[in-house]
Image 1 (cartoon, rainbow, N blue to C red):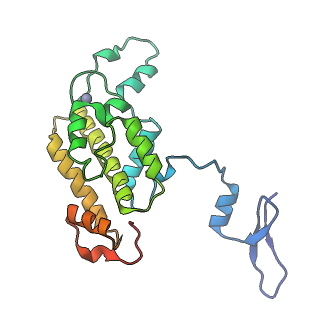
Image 2: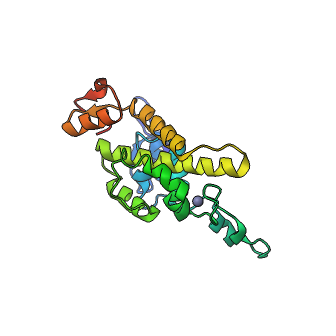
Image 3: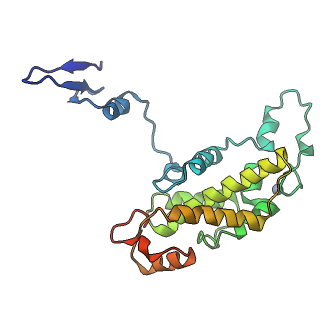
Length: 226
Ligand SMILES: [Zn+2]
């Protein structure tokens, strides 16, 4: 039983009796941590949520890693009546067949061109262009604070976000952008984010600053970006 009690002292103080029966100083953080239903950490947690992440990209990545995007293959499973022939649906990016998580990220001919335009900057040129391989790689580096690894997560999230945005723009409006234009938008978005980071001084980071055309003024001794 948990409750808020007052202790007898010169000055009354609010304390919280935890679920383990231990009385601790009251704070909303303590209470929330005590009453929430805590689950085990998930392997993709730091892939999606990390200090340098762009929030709208993080939410999108949460949908992607949990396969919650409303792609054609997912919608086909919702078709109870079977009246809708989803095989007639075409990926709005390449027009070759129904889209899916695997197709859009990044087996689709269009999405693959976008990814090709940014993967070198993400230092992921050697990773196969299948979502499962990209996901496995990111899970492996998810907890790393190295600049290269943080940038990999930022670039993948931005690429997936803008490919999905382009997919929807083509489905619901006539606006179209080329793979080259999308790659440019992705790199600009990530570069702007990197401007808000501080980098630990090292040879590797010098190379990263050069590649991204970032000023050396972002270098500090103790970094938040690797
Ligand atoms: Zn496609």
